[in-house]
Length: 163
Image (cartoon, rainbow, N blue to C red; front, side, top):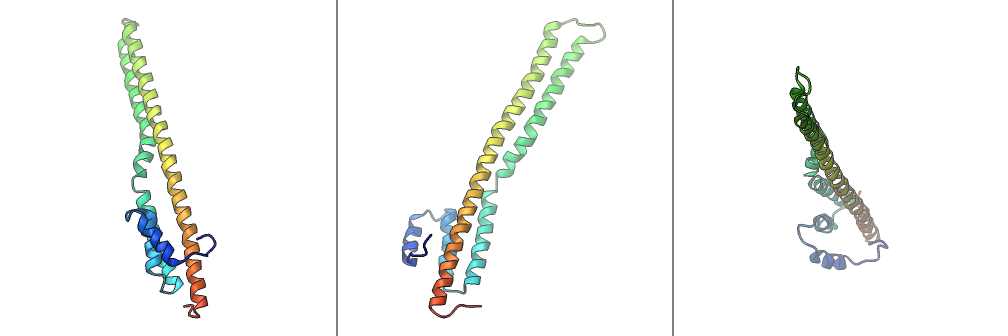
């Protein structure tokens, strides 16, 4: 596709090897299925399909994004609970149960660390999948442009470039 020196039949054969649920299969099928139409029509259908694919790729990323935001806050809630427990044990009489107080502080630190750990793991996952989505969309756009250009060249050679 990079050199425009490919036969449409060859691309169709390669397409049959892809899983029909593959995003690239879906995208290329739209282009191939509309290649006899004017280039602007094919380009419009391909853009519509690419938009649907992008929506599909980002469908569940909101979950990771929410976890990244919520996990530290939940850890903070655990921190507050642990510190409240520790301060209740101190009370008005002073330090009566030092082991109970340190247990509350430990609970607070564990909750904070756990919230941050969950957020960090989710952040790495979110960034990985976001990058994968961006790379897929960039590749699809690049190859789609090549295919539309090939269609335009074919139409120009056949003398019926549609306006």
